[in-house]
Image 1 (cartoon, one colour):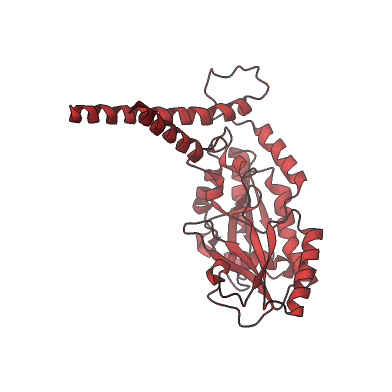
Image 2 (cartoon, helix red, strand yellow):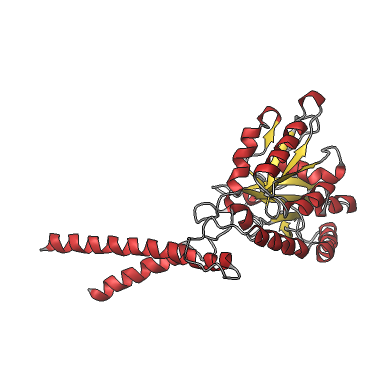
Length: 336
């Protein structure tokens, strides 16, 4: 019987070790974790009818483009045989086989539960060179990358058609307030929804040319928090509710990957280096236990990041062992 109890205990510890990986808790904020979390990867799907020469030519052209341009883009190329009876079309965010092929569609995956695919944009039969360039970069996404490593988050903003309803004064006031009260503050990146170069952002969030003002909070390596806001829902209270989630310590229960979906965009190594410098310079200490780390330590946040997951796991394992002991005693008492 003893070996059974030991096996059960080993199983509990193993399960907990898997459930709480070492990098789930760290000494930084949720915003910091956004720079190291895996990015959501979208798919540029090309639907063809098997060996059709037109479809093969499109795929060959797009493969060449991705080899030259797609290294840092969170989009992959995926050929789909529209004649394959085993294809599950819901995996591509469509109800059935496309009526006309070849056709290309940019397909995303919702991170909520249950996870489901959705079509971001499509081209018949394929994106041209200007549309591929707009997939790779745009003025707004380039500005976002330059700003986002230096602040808590970027508010991506598109003014609507009615000048009297514009929220720009509110956003500028918030930026000033955050800079004063919560360094390093936030940034505002505005974009023109009628600019063809911003087609991808508009398609991603469902922006209509004649719609009201739109604002979304973006952090990390391009993660758009949910929900974004339109018109009268763009308020200081609503935006602050999202922004303050990024300032709390990152824990097992508050992880950056659950807060939104990554925009399709490139993220080059220089931005990772810039983000690492920015995170280190802020030097968060909310989760460092007083007195446990010498002041002379060259990198206390690194040591805390290593120790805290172990401490979390130790507490959980101790609780599991205690529960096991109680269960054993009750069982022995019942048997006796």
